[in-house]
Image (cartoon, rainbow, N blue to C red; front, top):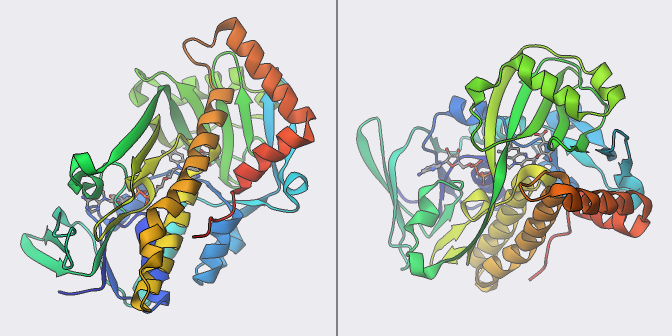
Length: 392
Ligand code: FAD
Ligand code: DHB
């Protein structure tokens, strides 16, 4: 089989790129190693930047998001048992974010892909990338015991942090930067009304807590936990008790608990691999970079990467290589700003082994500064709603 672009990985990056290329008249295949149900079963991101929602609209896949998603013009920054609203709209000249699950977004993209009759291979095994340092790259995989080879002009590595794409690049051609945080996030999903109508980020001496949601009837909560914690050791009751301890008293009293429908632990990491291009292989999304989830940036970065990539590929087929040559540098400028923001917000909100009394005082001074200085508040807000796309 021959296509113009072989997309490895059918998560948000791969599916968004698939739609963007389809719209540009570029034919592509999506090769995903898991089943469709498995991909849709992963509960991850919840907050979309305005630029990401605009992209979904441009692609004609935003209708359900506008019906079911929740538009948020602010969030609460809680510490010392009190709430402080960060008014995103006021601080950014009217920008907002959309609370809409990654699962739902991926579902909408999969439906659009199927409706357009575009090819996706699920449960592809032994996926391997070949000859991307030359003019004729190939992707090989097996499916149902049969071997396949896809010849293409370009490979888009959209297969996440653990994927095969970045691992296929000779190690001495990539420079990596990494920070591993000494804690994780324990997340719970429950069919209970959210404790607050907006998200609540809480700095507490026992550790960070986040109150989020998926709908007016479905809550998503996170607790900073130890890296040694095992999800099986956290009963629902233990989770709700610990969450109550970390929330401001009025929220703790209002919290409605119920059985969890999902519970998982995610480690926190900042990671960037440079450059994001090797020959005719282009990395996008978590395959190239990871941020800790505190600033809700990962999925949004995947969306901006593939936006650049689709534009660069369209320019290539129109006769110009400029976009492809600038792809990595252009992406990385925005990526590093999000890496910085996510690291900073994580450092501000979590308890580290060496935080101690001094660290807590400094965190509180910064939080106090953020809620009282319009300049500091605006810097937080403009990063949270999403920085503009860079130009090349
Ligand atoms: P992935 O979602 O990892 O998709 C990669 C796909 O490639 C997967 O389907 C995988 O099965 C497939 N694959 C892997 N290896 C292969 C292979 N060898 N061959 C073929 N396919 C392969 N981001 C936000 O923007 N906002 C948030 O609020 C937010 N909250 C988060 C909360 C948590 C708890 C976590 C863990 C993450 C959160 N994120 C958030 C980050 C976000 O989920 C990721 O950044 C996003 O999923 C990246 O999309 P992706 O398509 O690049 O990678
Ligand atoms: C969610 C995740 C985040 O990392 C975040 O900052 C906000 C919300 C969520 O899953 O709802």
